[in-house]
Image (cartoon, rainbow, N blue to C red; front, side, top):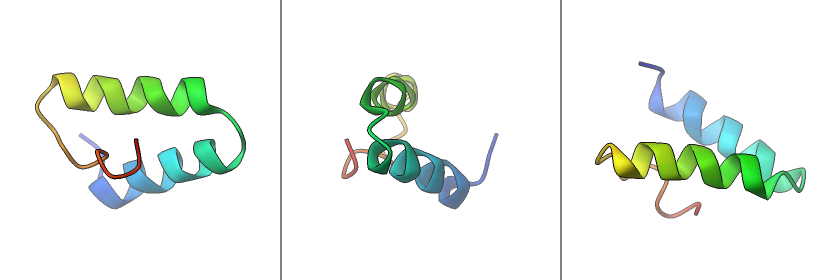
Length: 42
């Protein structure tokens, strides 16, 4: 398991660099596992 702040940072950078598909996929994976840490970014 990775640190939450690292995951958030990666997803934020993906969205900032117009890599929405990859960022959404990461958000979906964590969401399906019951982890809501990326909900506000998604």
